[in-house]
Length: 109
Image 1 (tube, helix red, strand yellow):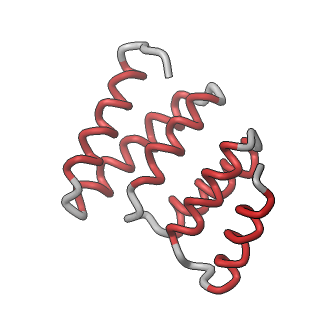
Image 2 (cartoon, rainbow, N blue to C red):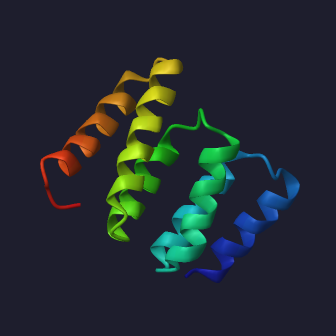
Image 3 (tube, rainbow, N blue to C red):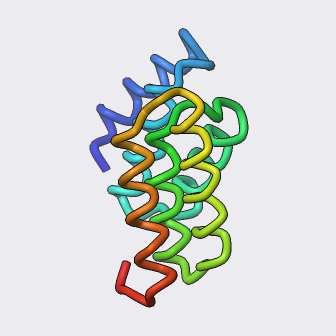
């Protein structure tokens, strides 16, 4: 993990703990580094605290799939579809429907 990048993100988070972009970037950075527990923690918190930040749902759902937690992935994709519909983000809703359908038809993550 690029320590510099992580340190900068943590500094940004200190400056604005509610910034969804920074929180998403932290979760993504941990995922990239292979720290699935930390990534999961950040993505779950972001989905809980800022439910209209729709990019979270795809990443969180895919992480659940990677962890073999299919039911949680399905629920996450469904929650994301609802969030995307609320804010009229039709592109995100479509991607989430596709990801959900992959599980339902038994496709690979």
